[in-house]
Length: 251
Image (tube, rainbow, N blue to C red; front, side, top):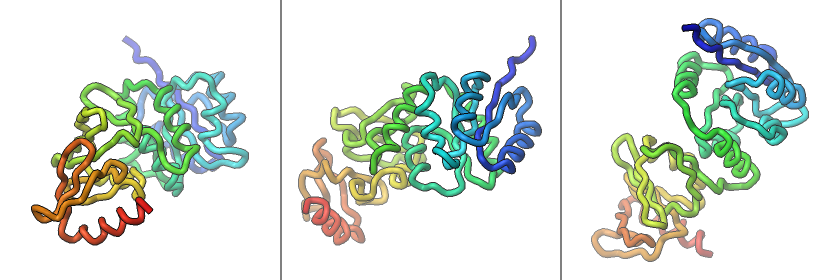
C-alpha cells in the first residue's frame, strides 16, 4: 500500500531558513513533500488555501504582518503549525499556553525531529488550539491554558486554576470546580508559562494562584489556605517574599 504524502508549506521571509528546513525535511522526513513556500503573510495565505497542506512552518515575525495575523486571515485552519522564531519570548509563552509547537532559530536537529514526532501522533482539535492562541496573544496575560490530559486536550480558563502541585515528572492542576487534572509536564513548565504576578511558587512542590488565597497561618511552620480548603506549606525561605508579594497583589 502506498503511503500518503504529507504536504508541507513553509512561510518565512528568511530564505536561508526555508533552505535549512527543506534540507531537514528531505534528509529526515520521508513522505513529507514541500508543496509551497512564501515570504510574507499575503502570499503565505494564498499558498495554504491553494495547496491545502497538513503542516505549515510559519515564521512569527515578517514584514507586513506576523504569523498570527496570517492565521486570522484564514477561515479554515485544519492543519498543524510549527511556529518559527529567533527570540520572541512573549509569543513563545502564548504558543506554550496553547499546546502548539515552535522551533527556535538556528534550528536544532534533535528539536526538529522531536517536533515532527509530536505532530505525527497529534490528534488534537487544531481549530480550538489556534482560537485560544489568538485570544491569548491579544492580551497582556493569557486567558486560557491548553493541557494534555488522559482525556485528551482540555481548555482551562487560567483564573479557574487554584494551584498546581508537583508529582515527580508530572503535575496535578486543581481547579475551582473541584476537578483535578494530571498532566505530563513538570511544575517548572507551568511556573515559566503562567504570569508571575498572579502565580507564586510558594514551595518546591506547589505553585498557587494568589487570587484564590483565603488566609496565611503562622501555625505548623506557616501555610496558606486556598479556596478549595487545601493547606499549602510555605517554604521557610519564601515566607518573607510571599508576604511582600501578597501585600503588593492586594494593594
